[in-house]
Image (cartoon, rainbow, N blue to C red; front, side):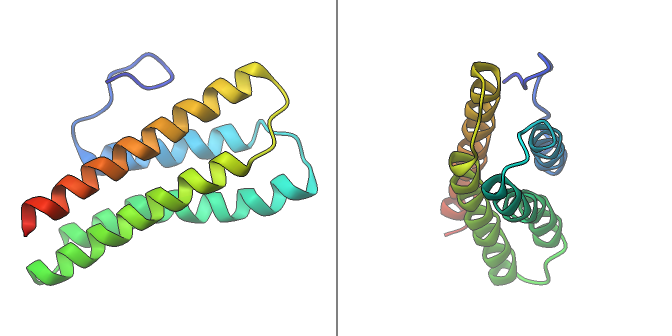
Amino acid sequence: MVNKMGNKKPYDLGERTKLFAKEVIAYQNTLSRTLANAEIRKQLIRSVGSVGANYIEANESFSKKDFILRIKICRKEAKESCYWLELLEVSSNDAEKTRDGLIQEANELLRIFNAIIEKQK
């Protein structure tokens, strides 16, 4: 697993979700300032930040039920992040490649959260 900077992705899921949020925030700062992008970026930043924040909450949960609920929220926010990333207006091939990589990472996180939920059943 390699992130956009050529580094291996961290095995620590908390670090990985934080890195994902940081990469999305840096990426959205490079996009054109259209009205549509401005609104989408607000939603995108909320959803990518929520993935990691809810993962932290899951690790501090008081019960198995609470843990599963928080992981399901992480999964939901990763899905939402994909949605907002897909809606962004990009104006170059490089921006599109970066966006596709971020969508791939969101989908990988989604699959990881699915696996955690399945394992807890």
